[in-house]
Structures are given as structure tokens and as C-alpha cells.
Length: 331
Image (cartoon, helix red, strand yellow):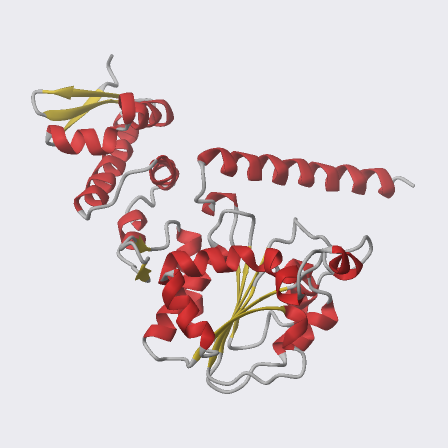
């Protein structure tokens, strides 16, 4: 072919094994998305196709190679995101993002932002007193917030961590659940416990919780308190009412840091009730020291299928809104 162009990359067989994927799954993605052919030949990798696309595919392979050299396990999500960035000619951000390690889990696994949106979110938390992380499930909003809180606590930047969620389904149903009050609300707070155990270990958490240095409480328990020198995370904030959100934000004292996370598409509030998260986004978006980070389906770091599910729902809901506007606009 007249427009055929090739670049040969030096790459050891061991590295190919790490970044090509099981049965060359990841390489096949690169070939399909960039329209190139990638061949393992004589201890190197030959990429052939149209010149612009070959150069983009090679840049992605080089970025994945650097990630592998740093000890990262190359996963499908990493490859998908590297391809997306490569197609947008932003492939260099992959290794820039990877260089930002927040902390390590109890098992020694590094916790890092994995997408540009996550990196901007983490940077915003470092620079601002209050940050709203808004986006769909799987974008790492809560997990990264917990990692930032635990790191600040370990570095003695704050004296305690307070994690809270609205127990929205509780209401009148709470009385029907077995056990004492703590047993009744624990299921609503379980995701917060799980993240804490993974990042700092169950034993370490229990020790600090016993001293009152780490609290995991329902939002209702925050009323009447003023919280100084604390790292405070409000999770599932889409399920707060405007009054609850105002109550929470006015609890903040000196030396404190706040992260509010939520997914506006997954409200469990009664029909017709406005979300405190949506109201806060309108009321507070121009105040210095408060940042709003909007994560999207591109920032989903769970199984790639979750990313497709989130995008499919986003597209469906956008069409429904458009259809409703047309329908009611004609009346």
C-alpha cells in the first residue's frame, strides 16, 4: 500500500507479555482503534499503517511500557484510557497521572488517580478547603477522598477523620431493622468502612475509632456540632435535602477540610424533593476556596463494561430530556 508506514519499537519478550494482554487482547484493541497492524518480529514490535495513526499507536505503546517499568499491572481500563488519550493526542498525561501516588493500601498497593478527571479532582482537594466531587458510580470519588483523608491524618495535618452519609432509606423503615441504633445504620455506612479497612487496615481503624479519632456516622448525627481540625467526607450527597446540605456545610470549623461526593443521576429522595447537592452547585459555585469537579463516564475505573453502562444511561437520559422538551414545548 502506498500510504503504508512502519515504526519498529525495541521491546523485550517479557515486556510484551506484560502489556499485550492475555491472547494479545490489548494489542487487538490498539489495532482496531488506530487501524494499524502490530507484529512481534525479531525481538521488536513493528507497527504498520497510515503514518499519523502509527505514530499515535506507538506513543500509546511507549506510555504503557513506562507504566509497566514502574511496576504497574497493565489492566484493560489502563489500555482503554491510554487509547482514548492517544486518539486525542494527550497520551503523555498517562504517565504524568501515574506519577502522583497519594498513599498505599494496607497490602502495599499504591493508590493513584487513573484518569485526567481524577487527577484534577485530587489536585482540587489539595488546593481548596471544600471540594465537591460529582460523577457516576465507579469514578473513584469516595475512594480517592478516603485516601486523601487517611494520608492527611497520618501526616498529622488533621487530628481526626469524620465520614458521613445520609441514611436516606432509613426514615420510618429504620424501626423494622434488627438490633440497636448502630446496627440499624451500619448497612448504610458499610461502603465507607470497606474503603477504610482496605486503606488503613481493620485493626488500625478500630484503634483510632476507639479513641474517637475516626468516626463513621449518619448525617443526622452531625447536627449541632462544630468540627475543627478534621477531614470530613460527606458521601452520597445527592440524597441530602438543601436544608441538610446547609446544616452540614455550616458545621465546618478552623483547620478542617471537606470533600462532598455524589452522583446526581442516582437520587433516592422522594419524588419532587430537590437535592441539596444540586442546590449547592448553583449557590456556591463562585465562592473562592470551594471547587466543583465533574467526573464523567471517561473517569470510570471499574470493569470497562461499567463505563459502557454509564455512557449508555447518560445518552438515554439526554435523549429523554430532549424528547420531553420537544413534547412539552409544542403544547
